[in-house]
Image (cartoon, rainbow, N blue to C red; front, top):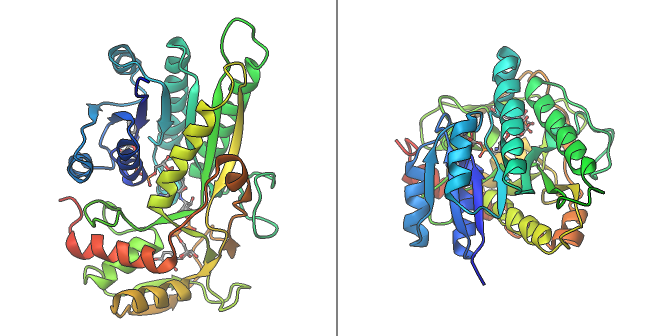
Length: 349
Ligand code: NAD
Ligand code: WQD
């Protein structure tokens, strides 16, 4: 059987590079497009080194229709995994138009091009941020959706666009329907166990795990824990941290499920990708210290605007329908983060 070719937008980024690695290991042909606005090509060089397999890279922007046409003409693509987008919550409040343009317009150009080439199998990176401030935890996929910042709204709007798209040609007898999986990631952390690829944020990290790792390696003096008066077990925020390799594997399971559908069986379904366990910030600091033997200096600071107390997944739909479960525990998340950070204190630079 001919090997399937997967187009990965944003494939040089943190989650994209880990997913490319899993795709290559599983025997797919991989074509990446990325404008390298928040990533380094070195990540993909290392993916090829680890797997001893090659992928095709095209540098360009998903909003550039001519560029997309060129890529779609050159390769016989079977499905698209769409990671490309901007993801910093704070920056999205300062530059909302940049976020709407990149994320929403980018997805429009991509899906228009896919339709023109009759490629209608898509896995999209959404986020637990679309649940806003949930009324309770754990969160199931049918919880009400909302957003508290422009970044979150881009995810919410794109989800709606994709649902409309799938709905529109459900009963169209002349063309095969869209088959779309929306994956709502909780908090991805960790790195590939080789320690060669990982998260490489620009400047001072916004997210907890890279911040802890940079304190440990001596790049930052101490962690500020945002809030110790939340209604949680120890007063600090609770999240569902998931190993990025587990997350990457979730994309392969989503693809398999889409490929297994009958040709006329379209649709758009969202899945939570999380572990189902909520961990507090203090517990994260302790887990890192225990796993790595590194001490993390911290102080308590006021709550960060827009943060919520607790957010964790009910991941049972992905277990039932995608045959996917997270496998790696907190210890592995900490050790793999530390292997990457200590071996690459300056990231890919
Ligand atoms: P990342 O920034 O590391 O990867 C995104 C990649 O897309 C980068 O390589 C960037 O250069 C590229 N890109 C951005 N705009 C582009 C454009 N217009 N054209 C071509 N390439 C473009 O981010 P990540 O953490 O790997 O996230 C991947 C996806 O998952 C994003 O859509 C993000 O919103 C989503 N997501 C991330 C998290 C998280 O915590 N990391 C959580 C939930 C959802
Ligand atoms: C986790 C916990 C903080 C940093 C964000 C986005 C979300 C998704 C994942 C893309 C919280 C606390 C953090 C620090 C701290 N991204 N914290 N000190 O906010 O759950 O989710 O990334 O879709 O949309 O909002 O992740 O890692 O920033 O924070 O105390 O220096 O750590 O308050 O409780 P968050 P995070």
